[in-house]
Length: 259
Image (cartoon, rainbow, N blue to C red; front, side, top):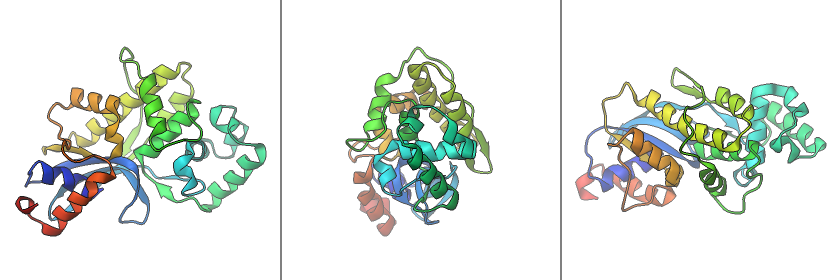
């Protein structure tokens, strides 16, 4: 995720410190967990992770990357514990009763359930909870489907908690579940992500650099530039994992002009 930001810095010839936002699917972080919702202050010398999404469990590990329903179910367990087993919604309907009980045990005990802070996986969870996508045919499908539901006439965002560098998105999920209209829910979800960036970035007087595959989402990107016209994103290199190599080279050279 540091390499994501460095890749943009190298392309744009930025030499000084930046405030980096890395939103992507799943990549190992320094603590051994799967990152993907990261806020960091960084330069070529190193980085400080100043905030991140609260961790949630990916039920079934790698399988969760292709099955939004697994991510959503885990988040329902975070919200409601065992009571989630009695809920009736698109996510719970995507499993048999036996599967639901099995996954609850796995969630409780942390069996094959790595921790993740990924915004990409959060997109998956929202898609499942709204009944848009339970199992993906290709990477990024859930985000594309949510894009199609976005309604620019919808205003407002959901609440979330931000304390000591941790972003608790569960209040957003709870409000989203109570929403009758999927387009309203999706639109407010997008707005909430922008508000999260705004709140975390507010104290920093540094250039805002964005990278990671989630920023390939055209709705999110348009909203970012509406809120932060000066935001910097790569043009020549892709924001997804294709851009990491340049960042790694830049890190190794430690001098942007040589890249």
